[in-house]
Figure 1 (cartoon, rainbow, N blue to C red):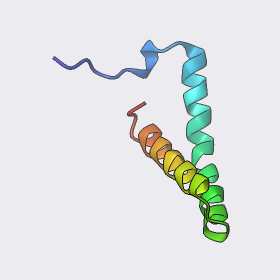
Figure 2: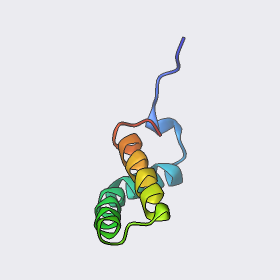
Figure 3: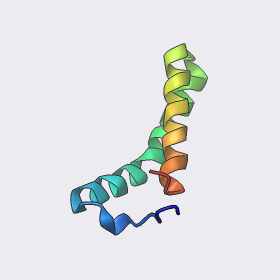
Length: 63
């Protein structure tokens, strides 16, 4: 049986870190997307993909 996700099982410092990352990940994605649009490099595209993946996973509580 799959264990249910409960954010209160995590230590308080980790919950605070998740909340902080959840707050700042969207502006970082927007900034990186604009930067990638004007100066596209392979690193920027990979980094933008990683940021988008983190944003989706944080917003949908996968992490």
